[in-house]
Structure formats: C-alpha cells, structure tokens
Image: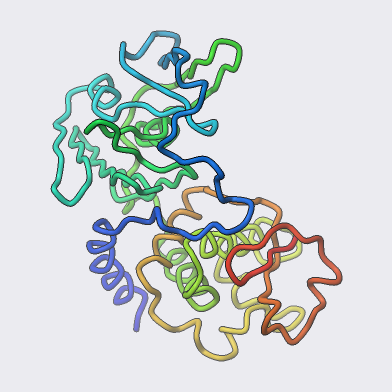
Length: 292
C-alpha cells in the first residue's frame, strides 16, 4: 500500500476512533492512581481562579483533583469567544467555533481539537451533568500557555486565544505512517500508555545524537544491527490498528511519559538481556520494561 493509500485508510479509521473512550488503559504500575478520580480532593474547596493574561476568565467552579485543575468546558469555551455547544447521546460534548471543533468524551483521557489528539493523565469528567476538562487540555485547544501558581492556587493562561492548528496542517504524514506502524508492530496488544511509551522511545531516539534524526531513520537504523525486530520479520508493514494511530498522534503532540527512555524489552520473550544488564531501568507498562 502506498503512503497516500495508507493515509486515506487512516482517515477512515479515525472517523470511528472518535466514538471510542480511551479511559480504560491499563495502568498497573506507577501510573495507577490510588484515588477515585471522581472523589474530589480536600483542596477542591479552595477557590481555583483562572486568568488569561492577568484577567479573571469567568466566575465559575474550578477544582483540583490529583494535581489537575479542572474547568467547566461550557464556561471556558464561552469565555474564549462565540461558539455553539451541544451534547451527544454518545457521551460527548461538542464545541463548534470559528476554525475550531472540539470533542470531549466523558471518561476519556483524550480531548480532540481540530482532529488533533490532546492526551492528559486525568480523565474528562461528568459531574452533575456538567463536563469538566483538565485546564491544560483546553488551554492547548486555544493555543494558550499554562502557569500554575501554588501560592494562591490559581492558573495563569498566557497568549491570545487562537484555534489550534488543524491536524492536516500540523501532523507530518510520513511520521504518522511509520510511527503508528512500529507502535502497532511492537505493542498492538498493550494498553494505550504502553503504546505511547513505545512511541516515546522512537521519538527520543530521533532527538539523540546516537541515532538518526528522523522517525523513519530510527526505525530502519542498522548501524549496530537491526534495532526493531518488526523490520526483519515484516510486521512493520502491517496496517496499524486505530489505537496505534492515536498513540502515534499523541506522541507527535509532545506528550511523553519520559524524555529519557531509549529502550524497551519484553523480558518474558527476550532472547538477549543486554538492555536489562547495561541500561538503567525506568518503568514497566504491560509486558514491556522501559530503560534509559
């Protein structure tokens, strides 16, 4: 299949992805929270104010859960400018504004803005029929920077509210093509976080002086022998599943579990223990151990 043919297939697949919730990723390691996400923390009774360039954005409820500031999506979007907000029976809020379309699924860790996938470690929540979204996700949708002020429990957003650049303009098709394939080939059966971590390894290598500076170059690097077994066994050419494509986009958005991990192995099937002996262990997700 050609790159163009593959990308057409991806576009069709992604039309189905928006109906999925990715909140069910398995986080059986350090990323698992020991607090119910719907149990608001003791800090929630504090007034969390949100400012844009020093001016308070609105007089609405904002609260803190597990170090994440949540904002009501309707109030936030209305404060950004004229928009239409609707609720779907499929469990998501839709925002339509000039040059910006946002989809927020309750229970999901992903906010979709102009078909770009903004991942947060905290879920989008429905409390008393109101949708609350992590402030950083909403800020990114409007191209705003975020600064947390611990002294007075406030959030300062900087910049001019501007619709996020669309997926067609932002993503490099070649990078999506190959990154989604290596993620799928190496971790098709892993949870979403495991897929993201594999993508992080590839991107981290492309930024390291030890490896080629492109995603394609990293995947097909043979300087010290084949780096990824799917290149040899042909699985790199398999069409990726929906979640692998989404994981690739999340990685390309800059979301990273670690900017240091460069290796991963499945210790249950590994035939060479060089990585585990020679590199520093970072964490485990699913069947993969990740190393620096």
